[in-house]
Length: 305
Image (cartoon, rainbow, N blue to C red; front, side):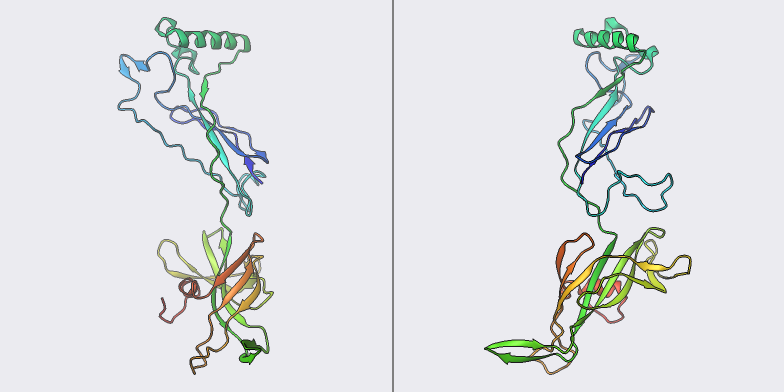
């Protein structure tokens, strides 16, 4: 799904906010900007013989944010807000206050100061304004090219730790080494969900095996304060239980069998995981690659990478 956006934004001179968001299709941002100094063809933009803008820059930055809807938002839900799992593209155009046909009729430049093209356009707009009783004072740019596709990040995440295979052993058969397991291997996984109230991810440790959904209700979690980086405990209540919500599912786990070239029981094969994430995509994850992140998010006490 892609979202359509029509946003009128008046800057540097005030104005009305115009919004028309429509579901489906490409995200179009119709942004009317009335910039101080104005832009437009025809007469020079001057006032009392001075430039309307001293040392004008060649480019001006226009930044747009499209926010996801979060439960409890003031003003209620926005059905056209971007949604998890969908991809969006956007295009924009901007509008400026026409210096040769401004919003306030009192600021209208004298017609003798306009060149031929500007006067022709002024005369057309003036006749239309007299007929419609409404001034068309905004000049619009062309539409931009569509942006690169973008999507929201997931509100859940996981970091994979070590794998332990119970009573697993390797046997030689048909010229191959085969792992024989009494039970499917288990893995330590840090599953996290975004806490909207505190603006941080809530992590919890889950012992997962094949088929485990990385969702869990817990009594308390440790949160890292994003400002002080201190670890704080958050305890759940009956009214507000702490729930790590996710539909991410472990499909297969490989690893955990003892390594053949060492004698220590602790030395086992690293974990390799096949999972389906919360958007329905398959992912292959590696516990070696995620070792540092796993130890950080699980508040591991041992020294690591």
